Amino acid sequence: MKKKNFIYKNESFKCENCGLLNEPKRPEIRNHCMFCLHSKHVDLDVPGDRLSECHGLFVPVDVDYHKKKGWVLVFECVKCGSKSRNMVVSDDNMDLVAKISSNARK
Image (cartoon, helix red, strand yellow):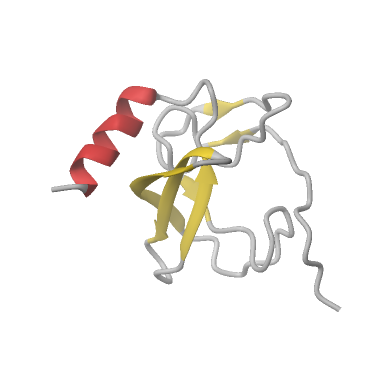
């Protein structure tokens, strides 16, 4: 039986795009780099399951606003083309968030 609920994972990681270390932030969950906003395709069905075999780099391609979740980054995997969404975290590079949003609108 597939798990359907979010699996809470808040681990430190070294970004595979920029190489910088990202430390966990409580109570927010860090699942993308706070510096360059890239992520890694590690989850398959639900956030935190770590069941994806792809492991490609997720590149931020857009920013959306959700009335309950706030700002949300939209990612596309460079390896398989899969799309994913992650909430913007309070200490993310907001200048880069704004730039991605602006570029996506052009």
